[in-house]
Amino acid sequence: MAHSLNPKYYTKKWIEEAPGRVTPNLDNELNIQRMSCMERLFSDSYTKRQALCEYNKFSLGDFSSEGAATAREDDGRSPFDWWASYRSEMLMLQKLVLRLLSQLVTSSCCERNWSIYGYIYNIKRNKLTSQHAEDLVYVHYNLHLLSRKEKEY
Image (cartoon, rainbow, N blue to C red; front, top):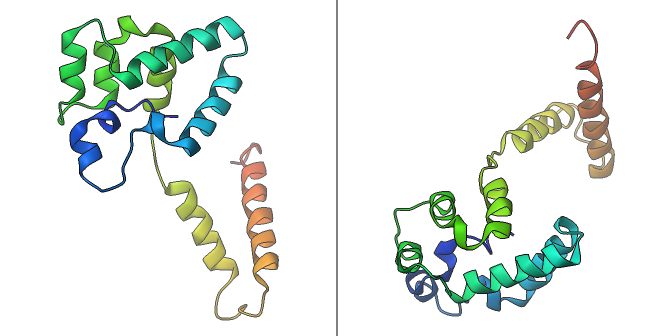
């Protein structure tokens, strides 16, 4: 959903960088995922319809402000900044976008999981099946989460 709402992916420059690239609104797989997301996020049919209309305006570049269209082509501007500046035209989507784009992206959870896997599946214990090793990682991590509730933690 965040990919579909990033203004960068609708610019001519981005589309022309690689052959066969299309904007997110023309990608069938993204359309299916976007609709699924809209169904979950907007339970009321009126707000869902309004959000879809706003998305259509956004994806087609139908802005009442000239600045919104030109700012979309600006490479140096973050998607969060663009939406914060031109939110008045698409209030329903703007709430969703600011929530999506303000999330931090990190790989620390994956790296923690790989570290646990390395601890369990090492040279001494290399005869474990992959399923058994995954089960042990699952149990180890959940025990760690449960231990956080203890007073001693």
